[in-house]
Amino acid sequence: MLRILSVLFFIIGSVISAQAETIRVKLETTMGDIHIDLYADKAPITVTNFLRYIDGGHFNNGAFYRVVRMNNQEQNNIKIEVIQGGRSGNSDIGLFEPIILERTSMTGIKHEDGTISMARGGPDTASSEFFICVNAQPSLDFGGMRNADSQGFAAFGKVTSGMDVVRAIQNVKTDTPIGALEYTSGQSVLEPVMFTSFIRE
Image 1 (cartoon, rainbow, N blue to C red):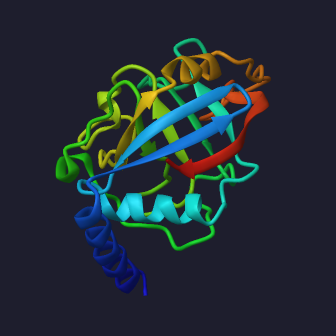
Image 2 (image 1 turned 180 degrees about the horizontal axis):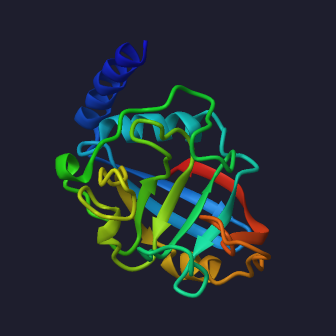
């Protein structure tokens, strides 16, 4: 079933690609607007899936709920800088079936400053949750060491306007860990930054 869905995503993605290589979307948050280009020609499966959530209004009442900066990841050997959000707060849970991982080695989209990419647990588990890079994050590319599987994450677009908002979100207050540190300890936003609208432009 998953294989059939993946093929369907590819076909739909190819149609989108033929119509427009870049699809522009706007994310309005309680801290400001973020404009993003989605690269349908390079990452058709991921973009097709993401647009299902946007077009269906499934990101309504979503939020940025996790931020990772250099001073709140003592427990992580490989440091990154991102803000993470979505609709569910769980990287492996979404309304639709998870999608095949479009690796950066195939798409050519690297995790640079402003890159938007899919959050995930294991490979081929991404659904609705995503993150935006703050500064270049090569450890998130295919072959990078952030995850033990070295498969990287599915980058599929880039912020074109609003990185000031992204950086402001990255610096909001987060929880103070108590006791043993877990993978995301100290990275949960105390007052999540809510999505007020997520639409195509």
